[in-house]
Each structure stands twice: as structure tokens, then as C-alpha cells.
Image 1 (spheres, rainbow, N blue to C red):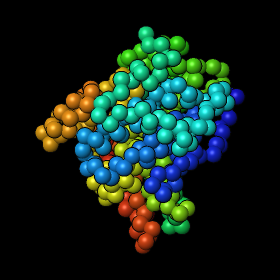
Image 2: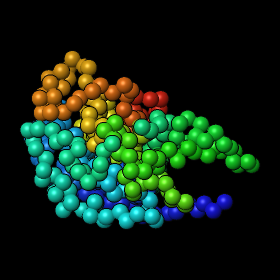
Image 3: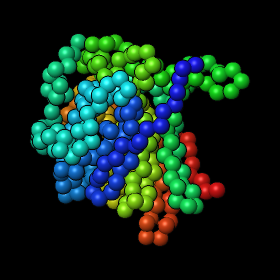
Image 4: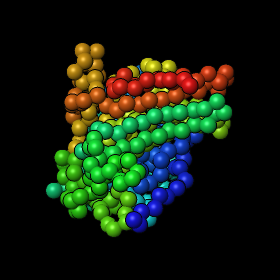
Length: 316
């Protein structure tokens, strides 16, 4: 009865001359996507092939540091102070400074102050643009299929089960990926931390890319991979969407890679392993980034549905 919806300003950053708009806390998605891109901006990624060990290594290390900051700082801004510096390029340069281009950084080294002792797959994302150029990136979820299984009487919709997104074991952070840091522990009236990352990319104030994805904590990695593919490597949207994705969430200290068991990726996996990464195959396909690319030169819109789940591009 005391719940109130809150309208918050989107977070904003930049990458290679594009403006990136994302979801603000208590979603971690916008902050994390922008921080990861800011870290990567300090490297000349384009000198390496997109699927080269060096490019993948740098993306993994950027995600590792971003998810560490997520655990350390992010929560409901009505209850915790989220440092504004997380969105700044100075912070990204500081985080990038200790990336070893020849070796993986053990995740435990990134947050020595955090003493070490998953999420649902039922999220949906859609992207829309109308004839006037108004763009919407919408990610929504019930968490765990039917959510809490409670229907609002007289309204006909289900209540979600997002309480599972709190750090439900305060003070217990372990190598298996359970996070118990203070910023996202439960409190009355507090909103839980989300990984939703609906994203709009602007070029000179005009939308050029609308994207987002389901996938729990892998949402952030999925959006980062798509943005790197399109903005850095200028891949067509279909190719950028279909490309194998990777994820590193700080803890557990493993790289989940869609292409890990593919013969074409054998040399890449071998090289990443030699750099010190623990590469594992993802048990499921990562995300479902349903996106729209807008060509600013001629206004042409290209909608691409992710083949990893059901979905389609449509024109009304």
C-alpha cells in the first residue's frame, strides 16, 4: 500500500563519440555498461580482431572490474550513496591502469576489503522506435517465471519475485558468486539491485541504437558485447547479435563463453587459458538482445530479433 513508483534520470556516458543512455540505480545495468565501456575506451581495441585473444581478454578484464564495483557500491540510492565517480572517465582510467594485457587478474585481488567466506531467466526486453524518432528500450521481469504467483485483485497482473535480487546473506561473499556486501542488503522500503540494462545510444543527440536483454547478471555483459560489436567494430546488427558472447561477473572467477566448445574457437580458448582465465562453456545461450539500428544518413531502421530465444522484428 505504501509503494510509490519513482521516475529517475537516466545515467549517461560516452563511447567513441556516441552518447550512451542507460537505466539508473537501483538498476546496476546502466552504470555497469557505461563503466565497462569507459574502461575499454582507454585501449585501442580496433587494432585487434574482434575474436582475438587480446580483444576478448580486455573485455573480460573490464567486466571483471565493473562487477567488482557493482558488488562494492551499487544499491538503492535512497539508502546508499552511489559514487558519482563510477560514471566518470577518471575512475575508468584508474580501473584500467592495473589491467595486465598478458595475464588475467585474480578476482579476489580486486576487492581485498570484501572478506570471502544466480538469477532467473524469465526477463524480457523489447526495443521500439516510432515514425517521429521517439525511442524506447524496455526491460521487464517477473523473476522466476510466474514471479511471486500472486495476482493483484481486480487488476489482473502478477506481482514479481524481485526480493531474490537483494544480497540475502549479509556479510557472506564467497567464491561461488554469492554476494553479501552492504549496499544491496535488505531494508524496509528499499529497492533491490537489478541488472536490467535497457540502453539507447545517441549520435549527435539522435538515437542510432536501441538495445537491451534478459539474462540475470549476464544482461550487463550481453549489452557490453553488443555495443562493442556495433560501435567499436562496426559490425552489422545481425552479425553483432549472433556473435558468441562472454561473461565475467567478478565472482565466481570464471569466464562463461558461448563459443567455448566450438572448434572455431579452440585457439581463442587456448590463448585465454594461457593468459590465466578459467574459461567454461555456458550451459545456456546468453541473453536475447532484441535491438534496432537507425542509419542517421538515410533514416533506415533495422530491427533484429535475437535467435537465442523466441522473438521477431516487426513493423506496424
